[in-house]
Amino acid sequence: MDRVYNFSAGPSCLPEEVLKECAAEMLNYNGTGQSVMEMSHRSAAYKPIITDAEAKVRKLMNVPDNYKILFLQGGGSTQFAMIPLNLGLKFKKAAYIRTGVWAKKAAAEAKKFITVDEIASSEDKGFSYIPRVEKVTGDYDYVYICFNNTIMGTHYEYIPDTGDIPLVADISSCILSEPLDVTKFGLLYAGAQKNLGPAGVTVVIIRDDLITETPLPGTPTMLTYKTHVDGESMYNTPPCYAIYVVGKVLGWIEKNGGAEGMGKRNHEKADYLYNYLDNSSFYHATAQKGSRSLMNVPFLTKYTGEEADAINKKFVKEAAAAGLANLGGHRLVGGMRASIYNAMTLEGVKKLVEFMEKFAKEN
Ligand SMILES: *Cc1c(COP(=O)(O)O)cnc(C)c1O
Image (cartoon, helix red, strand yellow):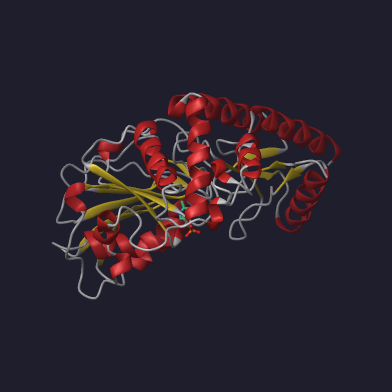
């Protein structure tokens, strides 16, 4: 079988040239006679791989010197705990905005350690929009948002003003999808498997003043940011191979115009798809205008109830047979979802729309 157009929400498609480079270097990386998988993370051959990946994140995201960049394990989900454990120190209280599954999970985890105030929510309309939050004030150690809601397909088109309160954002499914002003945030993090590489590594960008030696009592060593800052992401064995692939993807982003280049490419793709959905009498996008993700596009057909279940299944099956893979919606929301991360091409999106037109005519 030829390679498919892969619309998976994560792990998701990677640039083909990156995969080819990894394949070419698999048995003998850079004349070492070893695979990157086989070498010591303390070796002279590996060291430049991680320092280069870090330098590329710093350059591509314009990360100022007063922020550290970490490569951690445990996925985005471990950050749900690390954030309150390390940041919830003075007031033992944080503000969370409820915009979907990942924001809810983060808040539920934080409640194990600190007080959580849910200051806004879009649950009233099935999380189909991003609530507008004016200036946040109060005795909060931080304000937490999920910047791109992978499952609901919504995205912040503004950055909430939190004044002196550090703003924390989960950017797992939108990192480097377009330019982002890092200085507006105290902490940013992203699991790599959506837009940056394979699963197994999480990029954390943390401002120096939020790195503490004394997190909440009982915090494990591995869940303390300071541990990984001091160890330069090598306190213990890092996810070496995943970091290597992330470095390659970052190189690919650099070659393709950096964050600006990605933004242009992603707007083109998303506009093409939303424009089709908005003008269709058969399909509709579920996320409201003004809150729509560039990366994850959930959509439904005109059918409802049991008829909808059958038509959705048929869509996903026939699309897969046509080489358009992984278009099923998240198990919690159903319908369809096209994840069109950085590595997805405009050509892939056009092929999808072509298929959607044909399917609409036949059904
Ligand atoms: C996938 C995802 C997560 C969870 O990431 P894991 O690495 O599976 O723990 C968290 N937040 C968002 C926005 C995601 O898309």
